[in-house]
Length: 275
Length: 269
Image (cartoon, rainbow over all chains, first blue to last red; front, side):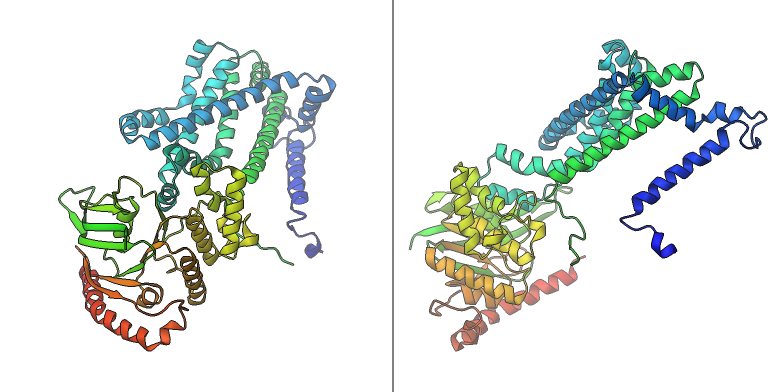
């Protein structure tokens, strides 16, 4: 029997889903008032107050997406901020990384400053950005950009530094000009490093957007969570977290698809096919 | 015979980046001439600066003293008339085999359709006609070497520099590649400067073999004209009596240097 249902590559997703269902069932069991006698709390309503109730959370999500259909505007804002922060941060990181890696003097001059900026807890810049760019999208994008920039920057820098000297010499012997070296050697080599950091940087762009909204805004999913928290509506907070998690997964999957298409020249282990 | 590549009294001293007082003179007082259409091999003990000489000839490395001229013109910057086949992996991993062979033509500014046709032709010549869309990691070491060969030769360089191009290959693939190279060379008669540590390979392929002394400051200590008639088959030529005579003659010069180089490596801290 166990042999039949044992997790396999094909049935793994079923098992993963069951685990999720089990988790929600446990959550439900522990929090719904009166279902089982309270163990940790003195009052049977307290568990629901602190942890929310799955059924109510799903009702909330349903209302957001279907019944009232009023979350799309907020989601759109959050996702736009994320994508903008990601695109701008990556472009700046790519340009900065390429420039500093190819200009030893500039890199030597700026090194301590870059280290300092990277070491700084940049979330703390959010209030400053709110002052500079207002409470709209601008301040959230700026926060996301500072988070994404350094990830991409360091990876591009590393990528250019680690270009195989033989490949470089070979391209020069084949007649590549400085521009062509940049376009055909440094950039592709750096891109592979950027892609290895893409999952992290998309996640951080998302963090920047949500944290920015949470600290002060008038729309976005972070704003919804902030509002609900203000009225101790734990179910809406949890629903917001669930929605954010789901969309973070979707973004991650999208990055994975893009990576698969663009990085097909990279060796993957075990590419043989059993016939 | 006009000189395709002429190194005159070349010396290369490397200075340690961390300690400017630490110097290492890899080659010293090397004069080496490769005539147009001549196949010259350089053999020497390991670490004697063979690759350094090749990099000087390619224009990738500027000599400390001495001069390099290419077809009578002093060499400035990269040697545009030379193609270089490296010892290590030199293909761009993000390009397919065809893309790699096309690269040089693209850099020359040839239209894509023309460079594609020429690259495909060269891939067929090195026996990889159907493998143009493979990425380097999808090919075996021997196939990658062939792509490198096509990549170098598609540009039709007047001088071909080769740095132990086949040393990483197994003996059968190696002989196949050596014969292919000889056939291609016989058709085009380019100047070839071929670096190897394998004396058999050097004698079987070359018109002339130059023996370098052990480093530091290595320099040519012997030069042998290989008068075995062409066309040669690298496997068959090794059992001819002339080959064995030449091998003995060159080896008697090379042996002491190999031992010297080995002793130095043993004593190195």
